[in-house]
Length: 131
Image (cartoon, rainbow, N blue to C red; front, side, top):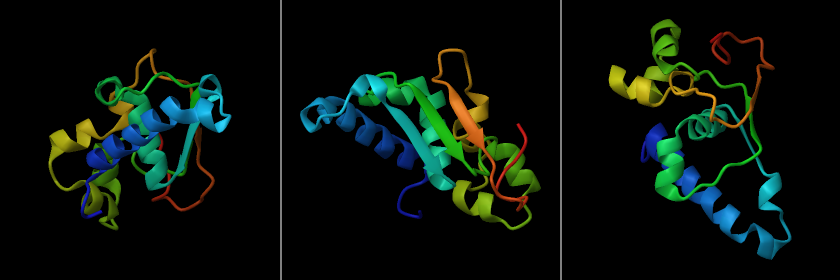
């Protein structure tokens, strides 16, 4: 931010994941035992990639074992933008409701997504939300 919005960040992350999947074996890694994990904004990016098969297909990302999401305030960007009084969500995601939908992992969940472990380890209200 501000050079790349959250959707562009997720596209860049998807390219990085595809690169790792393509090259893991040459580094001694096992692409069949891969998890994604992120904290805060990184958790949002990991969760969004996990729920957006269109972004996975566009970048050549193959399925992975699961995703760990730590302390994100942006599982439902629309709800967070309306309830977050600090302005942080709107600063990151703007005011376009269709963009809020496009960047809300909770709006794209389906049974084909990898398993996700959602962790809220902070007592600050802005850090986590119920979805």
